[in-house]
Length: 256
Image (tube, rainbow, N blue to C red):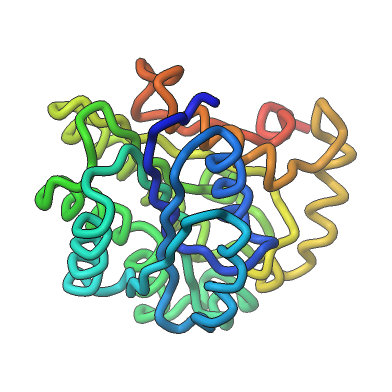
């Protein structure tokens, strides 16, 4: 129970196949009180039905593209739960055309949108959480990223650029938030069959390659990624900040 008596906020819950749900389940199993946020564009009834599986859980609507909405959401969380120990950023979006077409065809608006929602929102959440005193001293912020930020992954396109921006943001935020003893890290998860992954062309091929090439010859699960999040939320990771930790069965270590 490495998260006993801790409160953590999982931002960006969508469905039971999402990596965020794996993180929520692991946090709950490790003793944490789990709180959620969801996009206002999600079906709120379905979200509430899903989180019934975690006793006492509640989800708040949050539009990650709006600083005003982020502040309103986080203030609601603080009013109901007080200070919390951790925040997971599981928020990303890119226009379908910018994922399906060649990267060179990415529109200016599409480039801005992907980086705003997928990367800048983490900066805004960190800043606002600090300003309103939501996150405790020695708290932990975690963001989800992917190997497509480091190497070209067919079909990942502008999302790879956005994730690269997110990873750089993790390092700079770690420096700023470290003044308050708050840690900031990212987890680069191996590919997982999620609703979001369906937007990536030939995603099944990526899974096959990972299973063949990764040292452990298997694909990662949402539970495994969730357990890594729980570790970063816990006091066991108290000296780790500014890092991008790969949870991908070692695939990122392989050259050819």
